Image (cartoon, rainbow over the protein chains, first blue to last red):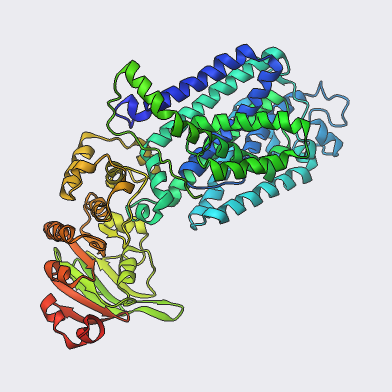
Length: 383
Length: 249
């Protein structure tokens, strides 16, 4: 382990923040919400994976990606493809002209399972693909962009175009992808019904557990030297380069980690909602994901989770009442956060509550003797 | 052209770079001895910073050769030039303002420079000892846990020098290291640089002639991308050409 003490990995404030979040997600929500609402929270949490990845990429690395929906979609589709194949057994699909292939393929007069679907007959392959496919795709994009020193706005525009291309591709290739409807009608996982209340509970807790795995990994990266290099890079790229580091590799690395997290999030969505569709891949959902991160505070890992929850709760309450106005409202939220709260909800906590809480903890637990914990910059950061 | 091997630590031969036809550095030749402090002076636009950019790989040479310990640098990537032993300080102090002095030095410590090396990098006792040692040399022992943003301009300059020292480069290139420093700080810096020169070779760009006289073993005067004069500080100071274009009457 690269840390001498536990405190080098997590400061007292971090432990507190993680503990409060765990309490909320593992105890408060399951006890106070009925399964329908809990399932909804689980869906929101699947977006939190993307937001946590964006804290590393955007908050720490300064890489603004407007195409995270692509990775979310890749993970979600990988899961959905496995479940769809399981639901399309020859017995279930005996009325089709070609039994044993997904129904939408049959409607599109496809008579043989396409080659890239074949590996998804295996759950193991599907589970690996959820993480590896987004990460490899991110590696290719990252390698092509960062080695050529493309960054900032140019990178954001390119990722946004990729999100657009991906949607067009999925919708256009209806026979291979299920088109605009996505992959629906998913029923069982290894013979186990996934649409029951019990399954919803199980998936909710799996989702929370996976989210915490990602949070702990992200915390590791944040507190390791990689986290410091990322902070250093944001303002003084040349200084880091002339200290002997290959900047591009660090950017590629966090971009891949962010993509892998997003892929897991997408898979969690598929499991909990029972479908995956291109409406989570394109430009609008990708920008929404950046807003989750901005609202939560782009330098705070737990903040990203709260951001995803808050914006999605607003979206379901306000957006269901005035669906046409939601996009405008979201735009306003984004502008408001950027102008008034550059560090989001976490920034508000750090400014007003962190000190008193620290003082309280010092009184209860004794003084924190860590002499050198990483100072999380409070100033606004440019992308 | 085939540059030959030499005993010099740095041999620059026929170095030319042109930006859209404008030759910022034009057929430059100069040689630096081991443990020498070489100061480069010259009017604005003479190509001083460009020469440092060329040596550290920030700018690609149009033609010519830069040999560091007889290794050709012109085709190497920036991180590899650093690993070969060339350190560079920028004109404006480039420190990581969001990190503490300790962390600034820690990042500059020359181990674990790959992504996975960084993930596994541990703040070992050797690392801490080395950081404290360097901090003492650059007069920042009491500021180790201060955020670098809060340092004075002069202290930032020292910190960046420290960030180079911790890498133990054989060749240090400093671009205006005393800019923005008080008289007392300048004096301290001169002592520091002379101390450093016992173990390292240095190329320094500087305008302050008094400071130049204090530290330089040899001075190179650049003008319009070419060498106008070279020699001891005293000799250069009295060179009529140098007085004409740079020092004034």
